[in-house]
Length: 131
Image (cartoon, rainbow, N blue to C red; front, side, top):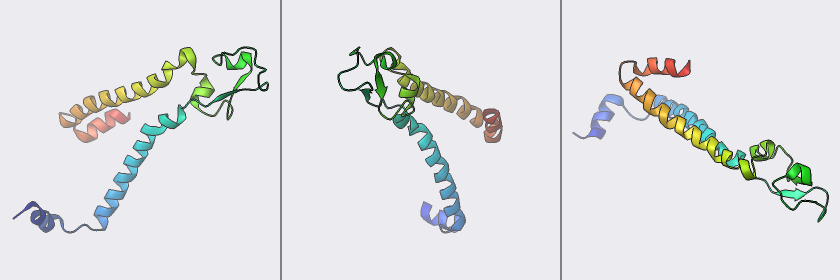
């Protein structure tokens, strides 16, 4: 007797409850994927243009957009880079945010994975994690 026959005899066919569980679990993972990938879209650097008109910006360096007449295409709220001015010397902060997020995911998975497999159990580690 193979694994398929054992599962079919004890668990039954794929039914409504399995479908419901699959959809709820998939929805949770889809939201997690959106949370993980939001940095790709929110941290893009929009193009800059001379707001004073073509050739009228006094300083050709776009690293100082406000003082020299440079402006963001789409306004200052076009992305987090434009909103917080994460250009030139502060450009490293864009990658630092995502690196810190994934380092926290890695650390949390190791710590809380060990806690849930050892003496706390799944409920206990979830309570510690959520509080």
